[in-house]
Image (cartoon, rainbow, N blue to C red; front, side):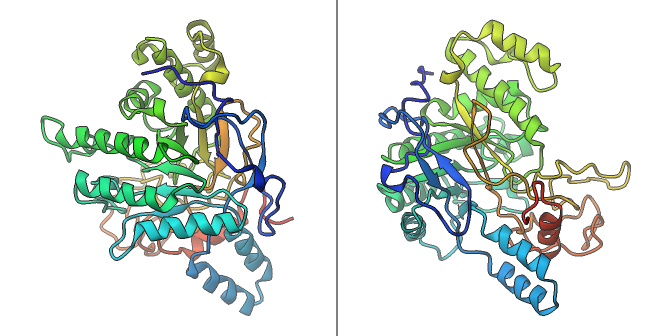
Length: 404
């Protein structure tokens, strides 16, 4: 793993200076240009104000707003309108009949017209989601590489932040019994992610982040070797909490430990020696201070998904469900911090809304025969479909509030 260039000397969001100071009527979220992962992104010495992109809303959200207004529930309607007018990622998924080059180009051009920075979540790696609720993806490595090439052609010289393949590293084929004894599919997964990092990272104005799961999943010692194998040194850094609910505090600590461990590995250290998130915090941070010689400004940066973590993770009632699936449409969650680069943390490049809040995680059964979600007493919508009940929870329990 080669040494990273100073994270302040190249472009985090690689925004053009022409976008500085321009406002979006739809949002007050601001973006600062800081260092990026590519050596060819150089010359940015201080932050440049910009805006994250607000994509068109899910049609189900617009229908729900109209229904709420017709029923006289104006406050809820206004809250939903605030939810969908907050910057959030655009997911490119390789769905049948789509033209990803056209789709990517449309997004980046629309963002340029808004003087905004688009966040693209690429989600088409073979065997994605271990064939669960969001199963799909390219049929093989060759098809995936062609798809990535088309994404790159669509982006071209436009600016984009790329959240590369949620769950691609935290949920490998070998993690769910899909692989053979030789680890063929796991090896292919690493090759696919490395290819995407190289292809998309070679574009002049992109910033790429790799999947590192979240703080209640892999230990630091487990995820860091995967990031290294996936060539995280050639990306800007990594992202945490995609489509999940972990608290900002836990994510900040976990990300700091991952970043420090990556810096330690860059100096020749063994990631197995690094502290993980279950160490006492003071001991873990003390270990980093005593064992990592690189200045923290040279450590990899990371971003967090705060779209649904305003109330933190859900704790299922004890001994209630055979498989609680605490990640799957948990009840009574709220939207979290708005997208911004003013994070107050030296390693957190930005808080982003990666998951589109209000869209279902899938038809959650929690180990029962279904068809109802026993935690909700209803059949949840399919993955990606608008979920009116959950959307209202996210609005009403948002922290900080969406209105006022």
